[in-house]
Image 1 (spheres, helix red, strand yellow):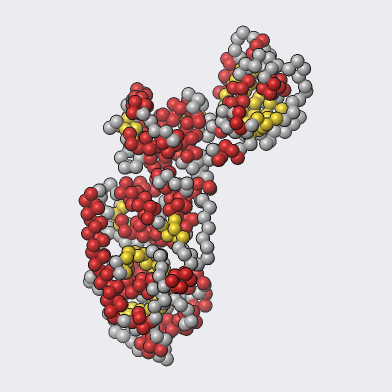
Image 2 (cartoon, helix red, strand yellow; image 1 turned 90 degrees about the vertical axis):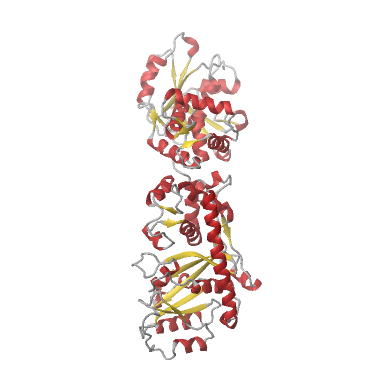
Length: 591
């Protein structure tokens, strides 16, 4: 409706009498050389669109026209032969003066119509006895709002590839259980979504019976297959009901060129300074349903084929190999349920516009019946308010990991994902969940490149900082000390120093202060010993500590150094991690 209100249609005529007959509803005694430009109000047209009519002569230009009506005399063969058809907009052939002949000119016109795909239709009319005058302008409007060109090839008598591609995506989105058929519930949801009216049971059966009569594999298990779905739309187009297919296409975000519109993919979304973006509860429920839809073997992971199937509704593959090094995977290297949600969380946090685009491809606003996918996003409040109130509502916390080359940063990131030694990962991010006092939170680790002189504000903006040094390299700690003194000494951002590769022999650091003395001097927590070179999965305690510090940045270092504080946080994390896994296993059994 909004789209229709914005459109001002231009219809160009070469015969003034048709315009005069339309306006006065009677044939004029005297026909002027040219009619004045007129606008028909939206409320008197079937499509509820204002229509601007311009009388066109051969000396004029009609570049601004959305549709052109080319008029010929049905009683004058030469006027038919003079029809010129070079146009980038839809054309309507209008045979005027039908009152002067008893036969139709359609036999002569059909070869012309078959030759030029831009011709939408041909209407025979009479300005004198007002025959088909209103119909002419109705078809002109229809040619603009519901053009045949992008949908159908009259020569081949089949839908065009771009139309098939768009309708296939629509079918996949509407097939909520991914079984390859639209059952009655899915068909009713589709019907209500597109046309605001559910189909009566008998109407549903009638639709399926039409498909059954025309193709053997159009209906399966009493549901509509993709072939049946495409056949129905071909039938609509062939029978002149283009508006049905266009209503569906536009509801799912397509423009006149069968491309998803910018307004659909990128709804207006403003983020105030010092705020972050997160998925809300409804968005996670939607993404869980998408995971369930494509996890066919119910192994709580997406195989490469399942992931490819999920992204068939996208114009490109959005996740590259780096994702497997960014989130949790199973033993085969497949993205797990937790890893899948983590990657969506990461995208929302780092690039919310891309997240909106991805949700658009998945049909979030349609399935969730929201105005746009912006409804899936929560904008967190300014961090300063969190500090003032000494509590936060955020669910995602960013930890920047800094250290000299070879200090063990990559290993620290991969250990968070349960991997022992890093295998040359091609990702500078790692994200997963942690539990603090029974609350599930996402911790996002970002490995910052160690070029000391080129650290930007973006490299430094975070909720907690990790300074990593290699205890076996005597020159490794100096980088951590310099970065802390230059960027974080007077900062309110909590800092933790990680003594990585603790399985190796500890070398004396060449820096003027030992790492322990440095921490004492600056009232930091003592260096945390860490190694990922273990037979078992690396300990997650340090990541719980980092998340806790991010959640409570107002707490003093003395509070954070309290052993009872960490014990309470860690015990809560362990208990809820076990409970969470047990609950998830129970949900899987139900699924």
